[in-house]
Structures are given as C-alpha cells and as structure tokens.
Length: 421
Image 1 (cartoon, helix red, strand yellow):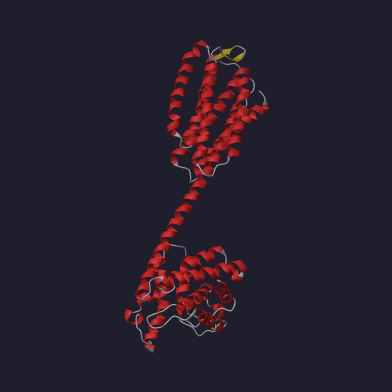
Image 2 (cartoon, rainbow, N blue to C red):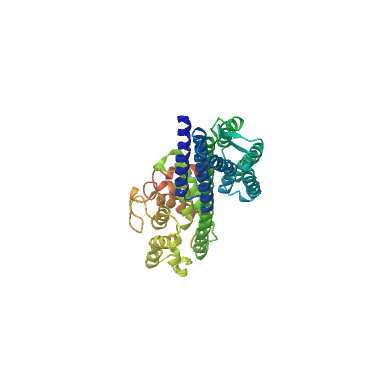
C-alpha cells in the first residue's frame, strides 16, 4: 500500500477528530449544529478508514464478503456528507428531500450487493460493477446540492467571503473528480475532509461575525434608549426650573463643538470615544437640581446666602444621583464621566469654585468642558431671575475669565468657534 496514501488517511482521521473537539469548544455555534457537524466529521473518519481497509483488502484478500461490506460502507457514507454539512449549517428544510435519495441509494446498494452490480469484488480485488453509474448519479446529485447549499449559505450572511467558497469548491473538484474518473486515484476523502474543514471555518467565521454585528446592533439600541432616558430626566429637571429643554439642547451642542474641535487639534488626547460619552453625558449636568426645592429654583429675587448654599448642593447630589441611576446599566467609565460632569461643572480653574474648590487640572477635563458650555448658555438665556445677555457680552465674559474660571487651553477653541459661526 502506498505510504503517502496511508498518511493522507491518517491525516483525515486526526483532522476530523480535532474538528469535533474544536466544534464543541465554540460557544457561538448552536447545539444542533454542533451535533450535525460532529456527525459529519465522524462519518468522514469512518468513510476514510473504510476506504483504507478496502484498499488493504485489495492487497491482502481475506473474505470477499468482508471486502464488500467495507466498500458498501464507503459508498453509502460519501453521498451523505453534503447533507450532514447542510444540517450543520442550519439548512435542514432544503436537505430533507436528499435524505430520501440517500436512503433509497443505500437500499439499492444493499439489494444489489449479492449481484455485484455496483461493487464487484474479484480475486484480483475491487472493481466497479456495470451499474456503478447509480453511485455516480447519487453522488453527483448530492454534490450539486452542496453547490446550491453553499450559495444559500452565503445569502444568509451579510459578511461573506466569495474567495473561501471558490477555494472550497476547487478543493472538492480537484480531489473528488479524479477519484471518480479513475478508481486508483484515492484523493476523495482527503479532499472532502479538507473541504469540510474550510467550509466549517467559513460558517463559524460568518456566525461569529453575525453574532458580533447583532451584539453591536443591540448595544446601539440600548445606548439610544439610555440617551432617551437621560434626556427625559434632564427635561424633567429643566421643567422645574421654568425651562423647556432648550438649555439641555444648547449645552449638548456647545459640548459637541468643543470636543470635536479639541479632538481635531489634539488637545488633552480627546478621542472619539470620549467625545461620544461627553456629548451623551452633557444633559445630566444639572440632575442634582431634583433635590432643590421649587421655591428656590423658581425664585425671581436674589437668593439669600442660605438659599445659594442649598443650590450649590445640586453638584454633590447630582453625582450621587448619577451613580445610583446608572449603576448596573452601563459601564463604569461612562458612569465616572457623567459623575464628574454633574459634580464638578461649577469648579473654577483658579480654585474658587464648588463643591470641592478644585484647581486647574485637578478638575476633570469633562467638567471643565461642561463649565464653558453651561455658563455661556446660562448667560445668553433668559431666566425668571434675569434677562439674557447679548452674545457678544457673553463671549467677552468667557474671554475675560480664561485662566480664572475657565480652562486656558480649551476656552479659546470655544470662543473661536462661536465667533466664526
């Protein structure tokens, strides 16, 4: 027996067993698919071993009946493989009619076995019978089905790789066709095993890509829902302050302008992830006002010192509310950013702000950005206790307080954007 052929068969068996272990280690593949793929590689191993034994019996005749049984096993398994692959890929409905063909084929093979019409075992070894075309016909039908299955499989996934399919088809063609044309060419099971591995890895890759896309889509929906909840809570806070939500929209817009310009220039290493979180967090900067009495929020006269101290508590209370509100529904990085925005947006660069009197870069960057947007919009909006300042006066106030109240690196960006808009 050719030693290269023996190595190919051993490779088929080892590769098939290895694939069974691999399949069961992948969590993304459904249990039913794992079962059918395992059956596929199990039958591949059995078919390869049966073929190897059949070749060995050609050289070492023991019993024609035993030889026939192993050839029958090989011939019955081969047409089954594309169907098992289809079941593994979840194409059960289209594969059911082909089971009928395969079962009829097995019955015909067994019925004709005594007459040596398909499998003819002679003293010289195995020869093809005069009705061998039945096996070729059935195998051709299942092979064509495999091509159709691959087409339907590729249509099921958005992320599909045509090159992988072409490679798999070439492997099948180059390995199976020569063995059909000439019985002494025994490359079929090796080719089918390699093809099966390529196709499974293709299916697994598509499944994982689709799963990741599904997770990404769900995350986007969750994030959209989270943003709506945040804006809804912020609207509730603003409505208690006689606002209609304009302050929320305005500050979020100013924050977006600042972070995108800072990201463009490269200030403070602001990246896209931070920018997205910052824009999303901006509406919650005043959430702490939920604990401030309406009598203070809606007061038209100047606040007393005691009332102002109560107002100042909205920063610390805002931080607590944010942590309680967002805990367990989003990641810690986002919670910390929103916490910093809510708690520290009234801190000042020179340390004269509240609630902790932080100074310079001790103040989180997100709070320093929020401070600019919040103060500018507060100056240019009419409130129950004040008139709106003209745009130019508000910008002058911001400019005069660079390095005192506002970050000296970020504030000029905002001023430039507003003057040029």
